Image 1 (cartoon, protein in one colour):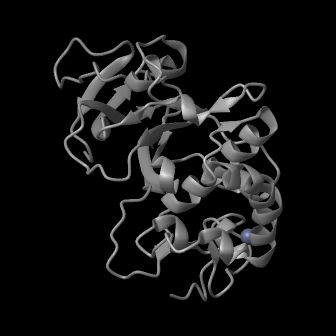
Image 2 (cartoon, protein in one colour; image 1 turned 45 degrees about the vertical axis):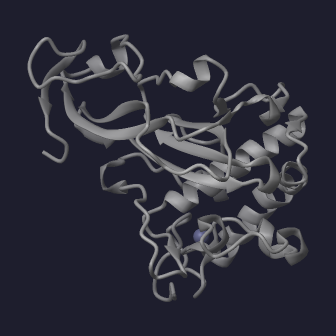
Length: 283
Ligand SMILES: [Zn+2]
């Protein structure tokens, strides 16, 4: 795998290092930390993105160093993070999942196939903040649920459609990326990153305390992963919804019901407030 001749996905100005950067480097700084349990089947271990030396250093300074004590605590089964640790952990998760979702990310395992973000319908720049000491852009949410390592992926009980929004001359596709953080003896964290600018989401498991919202969250609060129950199976999936066309200036102005497991879009009126037409995904 070589990123020679490809631009850095963060600054877009400098050429990538030939091997780019790992989407996380916590398990590379100290091999002992890994133990024997992480395998190459873990996408967090060997996913790389095109990144230049300067941005790669900025990521490591800003996210990896700060989060390491928190992630080590989680690995040792200490699942209650005090506010400073929780803040560092949450930012590391946001950074790591965003990079792993980037369409230019690659795994060394050629057999792996991962559906990543499609940025062709994301008009806002959502990656530059990572290397520039800026806050994350609006429209990103992250949730985590706990699940025992032995469970398998089955049909989810809840399904939330993520539409594409055409409004005021711009088309923005909502999308989700899920990946798992293995916590060894205490199971794993299924982490879902969702991009949905301008439309709230009501997560069915957050409502009853079975999922934790990692982002956005109040950084003054403790994050107690241990308080989440271990789920028996994957309960929520995200589906590609239709494209909704909004009348001028209505998208930002109208209040709408949050997207939820109860949301269903119809190709026939009545449409949600402000919507003038509904098209099948990709149309
Ligand atoms: Zn760069």
